[in-house]
Image 1 (tube, rainbow, N blue to C red):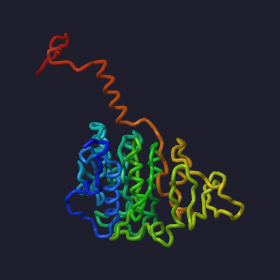
Image 2 (cartoon, rainbow, N blue to C red):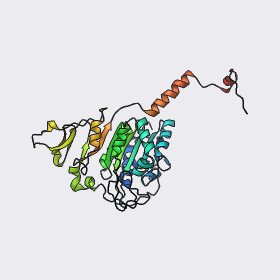
Image 3 (cartoon, rainbow, N blue to C red):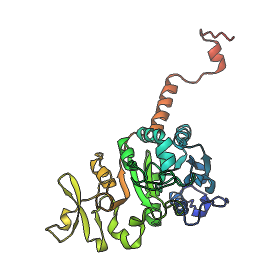
Image 4 (cartoon, rainbow, N blue to C red):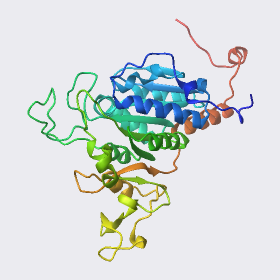
Length: 341
């Protein structure tokens, strides 16, 4: 069948393996969204590779009918970098958790983002170490009581967007495990982006950190506590989109349209493509708990930049053109001499 007409279904990306996650784990939903996203992208399974480190979410490659590599703790980014650089024609995905990616794997993560390698990163953030039975992770909130902090943590957490944008990231998006529609759209957008695409997935661990994201996943509060950003559209949220985001000096402020003199014209328009990351950072740091602003979902940043694997390929071709590969006879007929001991 011609590649232009070839259409895959989500089931074509599913393996025959039994899914070994706890019932109710948010990873189930994300896996389903990934299958759907890949079907929309219509990339052949044998042209796709899913890499992971260690953790609950890192079991995901087993459930994909694609190439896969379950690597070691924190090193998924390094392996994915090697795969993409060696085989740039592959669609490469990295699935990792907040502990795997931002603790032992933190250095690999920031340099993968800095290099802008064309890898799609699924950062499952449940703010806990699940596989090792409930220790606090780099994203656990201050005061979190866990197996390794029974009296509460005394440190502040990493916020993934700060690391990603601090490393000059070109793509950052966020979704939640119970919003399958937005999650699928975000994964498709990440795959279409040229460069490192970081998708933070707010995922629930029903065993060790249940309802950690309740303020933005509960139906009663989600509409007021989240905002779905779309490039080129007004930043509206709340019941009937009655609220919006405006600039108040250097800061973002939530207002009710029609009150205190604010109109729809005052509401900011989302520009995911602007190179300046200042507003993207402010949007990514909004939080109902921290600053009373709605959590930003969707694609927050999506800009163009040189892509590492493409630049490596160009460099190799340029050097090979200047010094073509020669045969053994060519080498033997030169004045170069080798001494083998």
